[in-house]
Amino acid sequence: MNRRKALKNIGLGVSAGLVLPGWLSSCKKDEDPKPEIDYSGVVAIIGGGAAGLYAADILQAKGISVKIYEASDRLGGRVRSLSLFDKPTQSLLFDPENLLSSDYPTDLGADRILGSDSVLANLISLQNIPFEEFSSGASQLYAIDGAMVDETKAQADSDFAAAKAFFDNFHGYLGGNTTVAEAIQAAGLHERMYDILNAWLGNKWGSNNTRLGATGVAESLRLLTRDTKELLLTRNPMQNALLSRFSGVTGTTTVELNTVINTIDYRDGVTTTLTGTRVVNGATEPFSVDVNKVIVTVPVSVLKAGDISFVPALPSAKTKALSNMGMDASMRVFLDFKQNFWGSSVDYLLGASNGPEYFNTGIGRSADAKTLSVTVNGPKAAELSGLGKDVVPLLLSELDSFYAGKATHNVRVSATGEKIAVIQDWSKEPYIRGGASYLLPAGVNDDRIALGAPINNRIFFAGEATDGTGDAGTVNGALLSGERAAQEVITSITG
Image 1 (cartoon, rainbow, N blue to C red):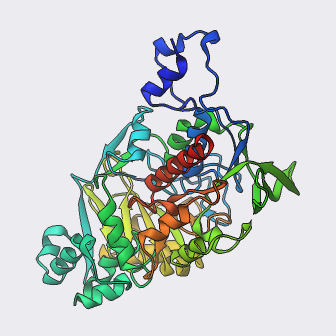
Image 2: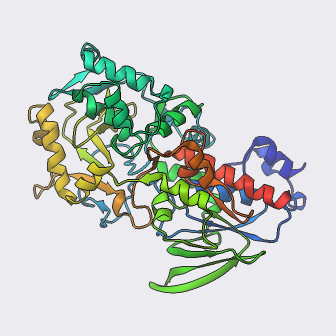
Image 3: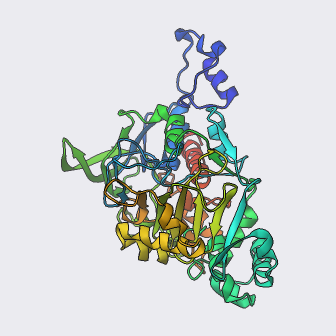
Protein backbone atom coordinates (compact mmCIF):
# COMPACT_ATOMS: atom_id res chain seq x y z
CA MET A 1 0.00 0.00 0.00
CA ASN A 2 1.30 3.50 -0.86
CA ARG A 3 0.88 5.56 2.31
CA ARG A 4 1.38 8.91 0.57
CA LYS A 5 -1.20 8.10 -2.07
CA ALA A 6 -3.63 6.97 0.61
CA LEU A 7 -3.22 10.27 2.48
CA LYS A 8 -3.77 12.18 -0.72
CA ASN A 9 -6.92 10.22 -1.48
CA ILE A 10 -8.58 11.07 1.82
CA GLY A 11 -7.63 14.73 1.39
CA LEU A 12 -5.74 15.26 4.65
CA GLY A 13 -2.30 16.66 5.29
CA VAL A 14 0.07 14.48 7.29
CA SER A 15 -0.24 16.96 10.15
CA ALA A 16 -4.01 17.06 10.26
CA GLY A 17 -4.04 15.97 13.90
CA LEU A 18 -6.70 13.31 13.32
CA VAL A 19 -6.86 9.60 14.06
CA LEU A 20 -6.06 7.72 10.87
CA PRO A 21 -8.30 4.90 9.66
CA GLY A 22 -7.13 1.43 10.67
CA TRP A 23 -6.32 0.40 7.10
CA LEU A 24 -4.01 3.41 6.78
CA SER A 25 -2.33 3.22 10.15
CA SER A 26 -1.46 -0.41 9.44
CA CYS A 27 0.95 0.58 6.66
CA LYS A 28 4.41 -0.76 7.38
CA LYS A 29 7.27 1.55 8.29
CA ASP A 30 9.32 0.36 5.37
CA GLU A 31 6.59 1.67 3.08
CA ASP A 32 6.93 5.26 4.35
CA PRO A 33 7.48 7.38 1.25
CA LYS A 34 10.03 9.96 0.39
CA PRO A 35 8.75 13.54 0.48
CA GLU A 36 6.29 14.25 -2.32
CA ILE A 37 8.30 17.35 -3.22
CA ASP A 38 12.09 17.07 -3.09
CA TYR A 39 13.11 20.50 -1.84
CA SER A 40 16.13 21.18 0.36
CA GLY A 41 15.18 24.75 1.25
CA VAL A 42 13.22 26.18 4.17
CA VAL A 43 10.03 28.22 3.93
CA ALA A 44 9.65 30.74 6.75
CA ILE A 45 6.14 31.74 7.77
CA ILE A 46 5.80 35.01 9.64
CA GLY A 47 2.74 34.86 11.86
CA GLY A 48 1.12 31.91 13.59
CA GLY A 49 -2.55 32.68 12.97
CA ALA A 50 -5.00 30.68 10.88
CA ALA A 51 -3.37 31.62 7.56
CA GLY A 52 0.15 30.76 8.68
CA LEU A 53 -0.85 27.48 10.30
CA TYR A 54 -2.79 26.30 7.25
CA ALA A 55 0.02 27.22 4.86
CA ALA A 56 2.53 25.41 7.08
CA ASP A 57 0.31 22.34 7.27
CA ILE A 58 -0.04 22.07 3.50
CA LEU A 59 3.65 22.59 2.83
CA GLN A 60 4.78 20.19 5.52
CA ALA A 61 2.38 17.55 4.21
CA LYS A 62 4.20 17.84 0.87
CA GLY A 63 7.55 17.28 2.55
CA ILE A 64 8.68 20.91 2.52
CA SER A 65 10.49 22.18 5.62
CA VAL A 66 8.73 25.11 7.30
CA LYS A 67 9.47 27.38 10.22
CA ILE A 68 6.84 29.58 11.85
CA TYR A 69 7.96 32.81 13.53
CA GLU A 70 5.29 34.20 15.85
CA ALA A 71 5.83 37.54 17.59
CA SER A 72 3.55 36.85 20.57
CA ASP A 73 3.65 34.08 23.14
CA ARG A 74 0.84 32.03 21.61
CA LEU A 75 -0.52 30.70 18.33
CA GLY A 76 -3.93 31.46 16.83
CA GLY A 77 -3.73 35.17 16.04
CA ARG A 78 -7.19 36.70 16.17
CA VAL A 79 -8.63 33.30 17.07
CA ARG A 80 -8.37 33.28 20.83
CA SER A 81 -10.40 31.64 23.58
CA LEU A 82 -10.27 32.45 27.28
CA SER A 83 -8.28 29.81 29.14
CA LEU A 84 -8.01 28.88 32.80
CA PHE A 85 -4.30 29.64 32.42
CA ASP A 86 -4.82 33.19 31.15
CA LYS A 87 -3.84 36.12 33.31
CA PRO A 88 -5.08 39.70 33.04
CA THR A 89 -3.04 41.95 30.76
CA GLN A 90 -3.36 45.42 29.30
CA SER A 91 -5.50 43.99 26.48
CA LEU A 92 -7.35 41.27 28.41
CA LEU A 93 -9.22 42.49 31.48
CA PHE A 94 -10.97 40.00 33.76
CA ASP A 95 -10.93 38.64 37.30
CA PRO A 96 -9.53 35.07 37.39
CA GLU A 97 -11.35 34.54 40.70
CA ASN A 98 -14.73 35.47 39.22
CA LEU A 99 -15.21 33.89 35.83
CA LEU A 100 -18.28 34.01 33.62
CA SER A 101 -21.12 31.66 34.55
CA SER A 102 -21.60 30.37 30.99
CA ASP A 103 -21.29 26.60 30.52
CA TYR A 104 -19.61 26.95 27.10
CA PRO A 105 -16.36 28.48 25.83
CA THR A 106 -15.60 32.20 25.86
CA ASP A 107 -14.18 33.08 22.44
CA LEU A 108 -12.46 36.44 22.57
CA GLY A 109 -11.94 36.76 18.81
CA ALA A 110 -13.51 34.67 16.07
CA ASP A 111 -16.51 33.00 17.71
CA ARG A 112 -18.91 32.09 14.91
CA ILE A 113 -18.54 29.78 11.93
CA LEU A 114 -19.73 31.73 8.91
CA GLY A 115 -21.21 29.38 6.33
CA SER A 116 -22.12 25.73 6.87
CA ASP A 117 -20.20 24.92 3.67
CA SER A 118 -17.23 27.18 4.41
CA VAL A 119 -13.60 26.15 4.71
CA LEU A 120 -13.74 26.64 8.49
CA ALA A 121 -16.87 24.50 8.81
CA ASN A 122 -15.24 21.76 6.74
CA LEU A 123 -12.06 21.94 8.80
CA ILE A 124 -14.03 21.52 12.02
CA SER A 125 -16.25 18.77 10.59
CA LEU A 126 -13.19 16.69 9.74
CA GLN A 127 -12.35 16.63 13.45
CA ASN A 128 -15.88 15.58 14.45
CA ILE A 129 -16.16 18.64 16.67
CA PRO A 130 -19.85 19.34 17.34
CA PHE A 131 -21.38 22.61 16.25
CA GLU A 132 -24.91 23.93 15.84
CA GLU A 133 -26.56 26.35 13.46
CA PHE A 134 -28.40 29.02 15.40
CA SER A 135 -29.20 31.63 12.78
CA SER A 136 -32.26 30.05 11.14
CA GLY A 137 -34.37 29.64 14.28
CA ALA A 138 -33.31 32.75 16.16
CA SER A 139 -34.71 36.27 16.13
CA GLN A 140 -33.10 39.69 16.18
CA LEU A 141 -34.09 42.79 18.11
CA TYR A 142 -33.46 46.33 16.86
CA ALA A 143 -32.87 49.58 18.72
CA ILE A 144 -35.51 51.97 17.38
CA ASP A 145 -36.49 55.18 19.14
CA GLY A 146 -35.18 54.04 22.52
CA ALA A 147 -36.75 50.58 22.52
CA MET A 148 -35.66 47.09 21.45
CA VAL A 149 -38.28 45.85 19.01
CA ASP A 150 -38.66 42.57 17.17
CA GLU A 151 -38.53 42.05 13.41
CA THR A 152 -42.30 42.16 12.94
CA LYS A 153 -42.68 45.49 14.68
CA ALA A 154 -39.58 46.84 12.98
CA GLN A 155 -40.85 45.91 9.51
CA ALA A 156 -44.00 47.90 10.21
CA ASP A 157 -41.80 50.98 10.42
CA SER A 158 -41.39 52.35 6.89
CA ASP A 159 -37.92 53.75 7.66
CA PHE A 160 -36.74 50.34 8.85
CA ALA A 161 -38.27 48.58 5.85
CA ALA A 162 -36.43 50.96 3.50
CA ALA A 163 -33.14 50.45 5.37
CA LYS A 164 -33.58 46.67 5.30
CA ALA A 165 -34.23 46.71 1.56
CA PHE A 166 -31.11 48.84 1.08
CA PHE A 167 -29.04 46.35 3.09
CA ASP A 168 -30.50 43.26 1.43
CA ASN A 169 -29.66 44.65 -1.99
CA PHE A 170 -26.30 46.19 -1.19
CA HIS A 171 -24.50 43.56 -3.25
CA GLY A 172 -25.83 45.39 -6.30
CA TYR A 173 -24.35 48.75 -5.32
CA LEU A 174 -22.66 50.44 -8.29
CA GLY A 175 -22.54 54.00 -7.02
CA GLY A 176 -18.80 54.55 -7.17
CA ASN A 177 -16.07 55.14 -4.59
CA THR A 178 -17.95 56.59 -1.65
CA THR A 179 -18.29 55.61 1.97
CA VAL A 180 -21.21 53.44 2.99
CA ALA A 181 -22.52 56.43 4.96
CA GLU A 182 -22.56 58.54 1.78
CA ALA A 183 -24.35 55.74 -0.08
CA ILE A 184 -26.95 55.64 2.71
CA GLN A 185 -27.46 59.40 2.50
CA ALA A 186 -27.73 59.24 -1.28
CA ALA A 187 -30.46 56.61 -0.90
CA GLY A 188 -32.45 59.02 1.26
CA LEU A 189 -32.62 56.71 4.29
CA HIS A 190 -33.74 58.24 7.57
CA GLU A 191 -31.24 59.09 10.30
CA ARG A 192 -33.27 56.98 12.73
CA MET A 193 -31.83 53.91 10.96
CA TYR A 194 -28.18 54.97 10.86
CA ASP A 195 -27.13 52.96 13.93
CA ILE A 196 -28.89 49.84 12.69
CA LEU A 197 -27.27 50.21 9.28
CA ASN A 198 -23.93 50.59 11.04
CA ALA A 199 -24.53 47.31 12.89
CA TRP A 200 -25.36 45.54 9.61
CA LEU A 201 -22.51 47.00 7.59
CA GLY A 202 -19.85 49.18 9.20
CA ASN A 203 -19.39 47.35 12.49
CA LYS A 204 -19.76 43.95 10.85
CA TRP A 205 -16.97 44.79 8.38
CA GLY A 206 -14.57 46.01 11.06
CA SER A 207 -15.14 49.77 11.07
CA ASN A 208 -18.15 52.06 10.76
CA ASN A 209 -20.12 53.40 7.83
CA THR A 210 -18.32 56.75 7.77
CA ARG A 211 -15.02 55.00 6.93
CA LEU A 212 -16.03 51.83 5.13
CA GLY A 213 -15.87 51.89 1.33
CA ALA A 214 -19.14 50.99 -0.36
CA THR A 215 -17.63 49.49 -3.52
CA GLY A 216 -15.40 47.05 -1.65
CA VAL A 217 -18.29 45.70 0.44
CA ALA A 218 -20.53 45.27 -2.59
CA GLU A 219 -17.79 43.47 -4.52
CA SER A 220 -17.20 41.08 -1.63
CA LEU A 221 -20.90 40.30 -1.35
CA ARG A 222 -21.06 39.52 -5.05
CA LEU A 223 -17.99 37.26 -4.89
CA LEU A 224 -19.12 35.22 -1.89
CA THR A 225 -20.19 31.67 -2.82
CA ARG A 226 -20.62 30.03 0.61
CA ASP A 227 -24.00 30.12 2.33
CA THR A 228 -24.78 32.70 5.01
CA LYS A 229 -25.70 30.35 7.85
CA GLU A 230 -24.08 31.03 11.21
CA LEU A 231 -22.95 28.28 13.55
CA LEU A 232 -21.39 27.94 16.99
CA LEU A 233 -19.16 25.28 18.49
CA THR A 234 -21.23 23.67 21.22
CA ARG A 235 -18.45 22.64 23.62
CA ASN A 236 -15.00 23.29 22.15
CA PRO A 237 -13.18 26.64 22.25
CA MET A 238 -12.50 27.97 18.75
CA GLN A 239 -8.79 28.34 19.47
CA ASN A 240 -8.53 24.70 20.56
CA ALA A 241 -10.36 23.56 17.43
CA LEU A 242 -7.94 25.49 15.23
CA LEU A 243 -4.77 24.37 17.00
CA SER A 244 -5.95 20.76 17.21
CA ARG A 245 -6.41 20.67 13.45
CA PHE A 246 -2.86 21.90 12.95
CA SER A 247 -1.22 20.05 15.83
CA GLY A 248 1.37 18.62 13.46
CA VAL A 249 2.88 22.06 12.82
CA THR A 250 2.67 23.55 16.30
CA GLY A 251 5.62 21.71 17.86
CA THR A 252 8.71 23.43 19.20
CA THR A 253 10.81 22.33 16.25
CA THR A 254 8.50 24.11 13.82
CA VAL A 255 7.42 27.18 15.81
CA GLU A 256 9.40 29.95 17.47
CA LEU A 257 7.24 32.08 19.75
CA ASN A 258 8.19 35.52 21.06
CA THR A 259 10.12 36.09 17.83
CA VAL A 260 9.66 39.44 16.11
CA ILE A 261 10.74 39.84 12.49
CA ASN A 262 11.85 43.39 11.68
CA THR A 263 13.52 43.00 8.27
CA ILE A 264 13.06 40.73 5.26
CA ASP A 265 16.08 41.08 2.97
CA TYR A 266 15.59 39.24 -0.33
CA ARG A 267 18.30 40.89 -2.44
CA ASP A 268 20.22 37.63 -2.65
CA GLY A 269 19.04 35.51 -5.54
CA VAL A 270 18.97 32.33 -3.46
CA THR A 271 18.49 33.04 0.24
CA THR A 272 16.33 35.48 2.15
CA THR A 273 17.64 36.92 5.41
CA LEU A 274 15.27 37.56 8.30
CA THR A 275 16.44 39.74 11.16
CA GLY A 276 14.67 40.67 14.35
CA THR A 277 14.54 39.93 18.05
CA ARG A 278 13.51 36.97 20.14
CA VAL A 279 13.12 36.18 23.81
CA VAL A 280 15.51 33.55 25.20
CA ASN A 281 15.40 32.68 28.92
CA GLY A 282 13.48 35.86 29.61
CA ALA A 283 15.92 38.15 27.82
CA THR A 284 15.44 39.81 24.43
CA GLU A 285 18.25 39.29 21.97
CA PRO A 286 18.81 40.06 18.27
CA PHE A 287 18.88 37.23 15.77
CA SER A 288 19.30 36.61 12.06
CA VAL A 289 18.46 33.59 9.96
CA ASP A 290 18.71 32.67 6.28
CA VAL A 291 15.77 30.92 4.63
CA ASN A 292 14.74 30.36 1.04
CA LYS A 293 11.15 31.54 0.78
CA VAL A 294 8.90 33.54 3.09
CA ILE A 295 5.14 33.71 3.59
CA VAL A 296 4.11 36.93 5.35
CA THR A 297 0.80 36.61 7.21
CA VAL A 298 0.91 39.58 9.60
CA PRO A 299 -2.12 41.91 9.92
CA VAL A 300 -2.60 44.97 7.71
CA SER A 301 -1.98 47.18 10.76
CA VAL A 302 1.56 45.81 11.07
CA LEU A 303 2.32 46.23 7.35
CA LYS A 304 0.90 49.75 7.20
CA ALA A 305 2.92 50.79 10.25
CA GLY A 306 6.14 49.65 8.57
CA ASP A 307 7.02 47.32 11.44
CA ILE A 308 8.62 45.01 8.88
CA SER A 309 11.16 46.53 6.48
CA PHE A 310 11.48 44.89 3.08
CA VAL A 311 14.77 45.04 1.19
CA PRO A 312 14.17 45.89 -1.63
CA ALA A 313 11.09 47.92 -0.67
CA LEU A 314 7.63 46.63 -1.44
CA PRO A 315 6.50 47.24 -5.04
CA SER A 316 4.25 50.23 -5.63
CA ALA A 317 1.27 47.97 -6.36
CA LYS A 318 1.45 46.69 -2.79
CA THR A 319 1.93 50.08 -1.14
CA LYS A 320 -1.02 51.39 -3.16
CA ALA A 321 -3.13 48.42 -2.07
CA LEU A 322 -2.22 49.05 1.57
CA SER A 323 -3.12 52.73 1.23
CA ASN A 324 -6.62 51.67 0.17
CA MET A 325 -7.12 49.48 3.25
CA GLY A 326 -7.79 50.19 6.88
CA MET A 327 -7.76 48.21 10.10
CA ASP A 328 -9.50 49.88 13.01
CA ALA A 329 -9.72 49.45 16.75
CA SER A 330 -11.78 46.49 17.94
CA MET A 331 -12.95 45.19 21.28
CA ARG A 332 -15.24 42.55 22.71
CA VAL A 333 -16.90 42.80 26.11
CA PHE A 334 -18.69 39.93 27.87
CA LEU A 335 -21.42 40.86 30.33
CA ASP A 336 -22.69 38.15 32.69
CA PHE A 337 -26.17 38.23 34.19
CA LYS A 338 -28.23 36.35 36.77
CA GLN A 339 -31.10 36.02 34.33
CA ASN A 340 -31.80 36.38 30.62
CA PHE A 341 -33.99 39.47 30.25
CA TRP A 342 -33.68 39.85 26.46
CA GLY A 343 -35.26 36.51 25.39
CA SER A 344 -33.92 32.97 25.08
CA SER A 345 -34.60 32.79 21.31
CA VAL A 346 -32.92 36.15 20.57
CA ASP A 347 -29.44 36.00 19.04
CA TYR A 348 -28.64 39.66 18.30
CA LEU A 349 -29.56 43.04 19.74
CA LEU A 350 -28.59 45.43 16.96
CA GLY A 351 -28.26 49.16 16.51
CA ALA A 352 -27.42 50.62 19.91
CA SER A 353 -25.01 53.54 19.80
CA ASN A 354 -22.27 52.27 22.14
CA GLY A 355 -22.72 48.56 21.50
CA PRO A 356 -23.65 48.10 17.82
CA GLU A 357 -23.88 44.32 18.28
CA TYR A 358 -24.93 42.54 21.47
CA PHE A 359 -24.81 38.77 20.93
CA ASN A 360 -26.51 36.09 23.02
CA THR A 361 -23.49 33.81 23.34
CA GLY A 362 -25.49 30.80 24.53
CA ILE A 363 -27.99 30.77 21.66
CA GLY A 364 -28.40 27.25 20.30
CA ARG A 365 -25.90 25.69 22.67
CA SER A 366 -27.05 26.22 26.23
CA ALA A 367 -30.31 26.11 28.16
CA ASP A 368 -28.79 28.64 30.54
CA ALA A 369 -27.85 31.51 28.19
CA LYS A 370 -27.30 34.53 30.39
CA THR A 371 -24.20 36.11 28.86
CA LEU A 372 -24.05 38.81 26.20
CA SER A 373 -20.95 39.63 24.18
CA VAL A 374 -20.61 43.13 22.78
CA THR A 375 -18.51 43.58 19.64
CA VAL A 376 -17.44 47.13 18.87
CA ASN A 377 -15.28 48.16 15.89
CA GLY A 378 -14.00 51.41 14.42
CA PRO A 379 -13.91 54.86 16.05
CA LYS A 380 -16.37 53.81 18.74
CA ALA A 381 -14.03 50.99 19.78
CA ALA A 382 -11.13 53.46 19.94
CA GLU A 383 -13.25 55.71 22.15
CA LEU A 384 -14.32 52.89 24.48
CA SER A 385 -10.80 51.46 24.60
CA GLY A 386 -9.71 54.44 26.67
CA LEU A 387 -12.25 53.62 29.36
CA GLY A 388 -10.75 50.29 30.39
CA LYS A 389 -13.05 48.56 32.90
CA ASP A 390 -15.31 51.63 32.95
CA VAL A 391 -16.74 50.46 29.64
CA VAL A 392 -18.81 47.92 31.60
CA PRO A 393 -21.12 50.39 33.43
CA LEU A 394 -21.45 52.38 30.20
CA LEU A 395 -22.78 49.34 28.33
CA LEU A 396 -24.98 48.31 31.23
CA SER A 397 -26.49 51.79 31.27
CA GLU A 398 -27.23 51.48 27.57
CA LEU A 399 -29.00 48.16 28.13
CA ASP A 400 -30.84 49.67 31.11
CA SER A 401 -32.32 52.30 28.79
CA PHE A 402 -33.92 49.53 26.72
CA TYR A 403 -34.85 47.19 29.56
CA ALA A 404 -35.95 49.46 32.42
CA GLY A 405 -32.84 49.00 34.54
CA LYS A 406 -32.77 45.20 34.31
CA ALA A 407 -29.16 45.04 33.13
CA THR A 408 -27.64 46.74 36.18
CA HIS A 409 -30.07 44.95 38.50
CA ASN A 410 -29.18 41.51 37.09
CA VAL A 411 -25.48 41.81 36.34
CA ARG A 412 -23.41 39.33 38.32
CA VAL A 413 -21.05 40.84 40.85
CA SER A 414 -18.18 39.49 42.91
CA ALA A 415 -18.09 39.28 46.69
CA THR A 416 -16.48 42.73 46.70
CA GLY A 417 -19.19 44.22 44.50
CA GLU A 418 -17.19 44.28 41.24
CA LYS A 419 -19.25 43.67 38.11
CA ILE A 420 -18.17 40.39 36.50
CA ALA A 421 -17.10 40.88 32.92
CA VAL A 422 -14.36 40.02 30.43
CA ILE A 423 -12.85 42.61 28.09
CA GLN A 424 -10.64 41.74 25.12
CA ASP A 425 -9.26 44.91 23.58
CA TRP A 426 -7.66 43.89 20.29
CA SER A 427 -6.42 47.43 19.80
CA LYS A 428 -3.95 46.88 22.64
CA GLU A 429 -2.55 43.58 21.36
CA PRO A 430 0.92 44.77 20.28
CA TYR A 431 1.27 42.50 17.24
CA ILE A 432 -2.35 42.77 16.04
CA ARG A 433 -3.60 46.26 16.95
CA GLY A 434 -7.13 46.03 15.62
CA GLY A 435 -9.89 43.82 14.36
CA ALA A 436 -10.13 43.07 10.65
CA SER A 437 -9.03 44.70 7.43
CA TYR A 438 -11.52 46.68 5.37
CA LEU A 439 -11.43 48.61 2.11
CA LEU A 440 -11.56 52.39 2.19
CA PRO A 441 -13.71 54.29 -0.37
CA ALA A 442 -10.96 54.13 -3.03
CA GLY A 443 -10.34 50.44 -2.38
CA VAL A 444 -11.52 47.59 -4.58
CA ASN A 445 -11.16 43.83 -4.42
CA ASP A 446 -8.21 43.98 -6.81
CA ASP A 447 -6.28 45.69 -3.99
CA ARG A 448 -6.60 42.54 -1.91
CA ILE A 449 -5.36 40.47 -4.84
CA ALA A 450 -2.43 42.87 -5.37
CA LEU A 451 -1.49 42.68 -1.70
CA GLY A 452 -1.49 38.90 -1.89
CA ALA A 453 0.61 38.62 -5.06
CA PRO A 454 4.08 37.00 -4.69
CA ILE A 455 7.30 38.93 -5.19
CA ASN A 456 9.91 37.22 -7.38
CA ASN A 457 8.65 33.77 -6.34
CA ARG A 458 10.45 34.45 -3.05
CA ILE A 459 8.12 36.48 -0.85
CA PHE A 460 4.49 35.39 -0.55
CA PHE A 461 1.57 36.96 1.29
CA ALA A 462 -1.41 35.52 3.15
CA GLY A 463 -3.85 36.61 5.85
CA GLU A 464 -7.50 37.64 5.73
CA ALA A 465 -6.64 40.98 4.10
CA THR A 466 -5.30 39.18 1.01
CA ASP A 467 -8.39 37.07 0.41
CA GLY A 468 -10.02 37.91 -2.91
CA THR A 469 -12.95 35.48 -2.71
CA GLY A 470 -15.27 37.72 -0.71
CA ASP A 471 -14.38 36.32 2.73
CA ALA A 472 -11.80 38.92 3.78
CA GLY A 473 -12.06 39.87 7.43
CA THR A 474 -12.96 36.32 8.52
CA VAL A 475 -11.22 33.11 9.54
CA ASN A 476 -12.49 31.66 6.27
CA GLY A 477 -10.59 34.35 4.39
CA ALA A 478 -7.44 33.71 6.40
CA LEU A 479 -7.59 29.95 5.75
CA LEU A 480 -8.28 30.39 2.04
CA SER A 481 -5.37 32.81 1.74
CA GLY A 482 -3.05 30.37 3.51
CA GLU A 483 -4.08 27.65 1.09
CA ARG A 484 -3.48 29.97 -1.88
CA ALA A 485 -0.06 31.08 -0.64
CA ALA A 486 1.02 27.49 0.02
CA GLN A 487 0.04 26.51 -3.51
CA GLU A 488 1.98 29.47 -4.91
CA VAL A 489 5.07 28.31 -3.01
CA ILE A 490 4.61 24.77 -4.32
CA THR A 491 4.27 26.05 -7.89
CA SER A 492 7.38 28.18 -7.48
CA ILE A 493 9.30 25.04 -6.48
CA THR A 494 7.87 22.54 -8.94
CA GLY A 495 7.30 24.87 -11.86
